[in-house]
Structures are given as C-alpha cells and as structure tokens.
Image (tube, rainbow, N blue to C red):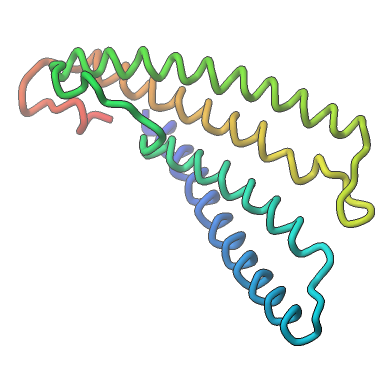
Length: 173
C-alpha cells in the first residue's frame, strides 16, 4: 500500500511540475504573440499551433491529476443514501468500469497515434505531429493506472472495514 502511494505521489509531483512549466511557457508565448502582432503586425508562425497542442497536454496531465485526487467527473446520486460499506463497494464497481473505459481509450488512442505516425503528418515544417499527440494514449494510460491504484486502496479499505466510527474508510485510503 505504501509503495503504491509513494509511486502515485512521485508521478503526481512530476505532473505538477510539468504543468507549471507548460502553463508558464504558454503564458509567455501567448504574450509574445500579442506583442509581436501589435508591434510588428505579425507573430510567430508556429506559435498558435504549438499553443493548441500544449492545451491538449495540459488537459490530459490535469485529468490524470484530477483522477489521482478523485476530483474527476463524478455523479453522486446515491452516495448520500448508502452506508459507508455500500458506498465503498459502489466506488469499487465504478472504478472497475472506469479502468475498463480508460484502457479501451488508451488502446484506441495508441492506434490513432500510430496511424498518424505512419501517415507522416508534420508540424512546424519537419516535426512529426504524433510527437504532440502521444499525450493522448499516455494520458489515458495514466488515468487507468490511477483508477487501478484507487481501486486497490478502496478494496483494502473494504477488507479492513469494521463499521466503527474510529475505523473510517476515508482514513484508510
């Protein structure tokens, strides 16, 4: 359990730093684009396409971090009505479904990126477009791994759950 949590925390710290670097780069590039367009009447030719692809990277890395902290899209219709144990069981079932979906999305997006690689599209003259699209399968894979870790933690919480208020399942995970 501790090893999984440490690996998860390490990956999260890398993702957080990566997001900081990307956001700062995007702000600086966008600012430079505005200044160059207003002063010189033209901007950096590759600036806008790069910004669009960086938004894709931010979205997937951010989604992975949201999954880690269980802040991803969530519908809690019956959660308030269920007991703590039943809620854990429901969360495990939902996470198993999420693992399945993200795994299929990882596989499909990997095939998409490999097709783009084979097709040979480029950006900025000579950079293959798949370099920028690789975040799609990597992002889905990270989310899938995060759902697996969360599911393992929830199963552990369920197995050690005794129903006492002292043994709160939230504290176990």
